[in-house]
Amino acid sequence: MKPGPFIYTAPDSLEEALELLDEHGGEAKPLAGGQSLMPLLNMRFAQPAVLVDLNPVPGLDGIVQRDAQLEIGATVRQASFGASPLVREHIPAAATAVPHIGHFVTRNRGTVGGSLAHADARGELPLALVALEGSVRVASHRNGERMVSADELFVTHFTTSLSDEELLVSSIWPIADNDWHFAFEEFAQRHGDYALGMVCVGIRVSNGHVSDARVAVSAVTDRPVCLDDAGAALIGHAAVPDAAREAGAMAATAVDPHSDLHATARYRRHLTGALVERACLVVFEAAS
Amino acid sequence: MQIRVEVNGLRIEETVSSRLLLSDFLRHQLKLTGTHVGCEHGVCGSCTVTVDGAAVRSCLMLAVQVDQAKLSTVESLAPGPQLHPLQEEFRKAHALQCGFCTPGILMASLDFLGRFPEPTREEITEMLSGHLCRCTGYIPIVNAIERAAPRLRTSP
Image 1 (cartoon, rainbow over the protein chains, first blue to last red):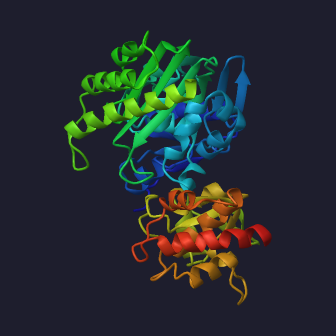
Image 2 (cartoon, chains in turn red, blue; image 1 turned 90 degrees about the vertical axis):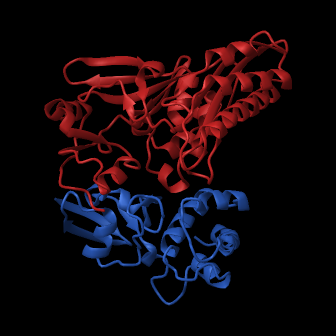
Image 3 (cartoon, rainbow over the protein chains, first blue to last red; image 1 turned 90 degrees about the horizontal axis):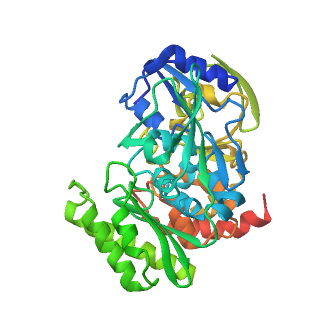
């Protein structure tokens, strides 16, 4: 349970980090908080030749509000993200997702950018970013910067659309207007375990009626996805329990989860519906 | 690689291999064996120490990453014969039996109570989800942390 040999690099600047990734390509791996990568190294599931430690890189740990969005640097710790007054005020759905990520101690070290780039289908922050229709800023030595929407970022479990020499430098979280309300719900057998199901529901309510809605789920899918039919089922309806139940039922039919040691597919499907219904009720309550 | 680090108030300079885990650096190189190593992949929590005040899993950090940092291990809690209030409450509440998980829980609790000085039992339980204890059933540990909280609010 010790990492295999690697060359450790601690770049002083973003440019130097990008040069290292460009030079070593698929042989290099960026190291942020290490709460997923270090176990993989210890168990030798991953044996990169070069580790590019992002922790010493200046300028990657900022939380900045720009117009109607928050930009979160790649190495902002999950604990700082969840405790940030800007995050709590402007993107409360993301803040409420944070306590579900791992444990108190792992959130001290784990980063927002690392969670997104790791793209675990059971990750809370990838789901929140998809539900909030966010994006990420990506940089590479050769091609400069580009923006990638959350929808295009997550390809499947543990896989993003970024290439080996690209680095996720920040995530952009749009601030929804005051008519929007969000709720994040998940179920795991023990707190901090990988979730069996997780949902993030956003609803825009005007005059007691739903005018817009997003129902996003993950852990029961191979990546976080918005279930358009379940969202559409809410639009035009009064914000009442019947509508929540209907959206839950639509969500349960829309997913095709797997069975394993921890739960059957049937259970996961039922759980998805229950979580969506619960999240809708939380949102309706907040909106009333 | 050369690192300079402050461990339990002592400034030291050491040469480490880049793939040396912080937990192994503490135990094997510095002989600070109070930090225990259980799972070595961040699940059990027994190797928890504080780095610049924040509780972290020392098996999920490299020794080279603590260059210029300030570390505290369980050895720092009671440098003399007088136990730290947290340790005292653990003893009084029978919050340990074999003691393997205890160093990690103590160091995590120190950071936790610093940031949440008046935690509810539920919040303590949630914090403890990151620490595996196979002896106690956790209730005595929750009791100990709950009783230590007011003592830490008055004494640093």
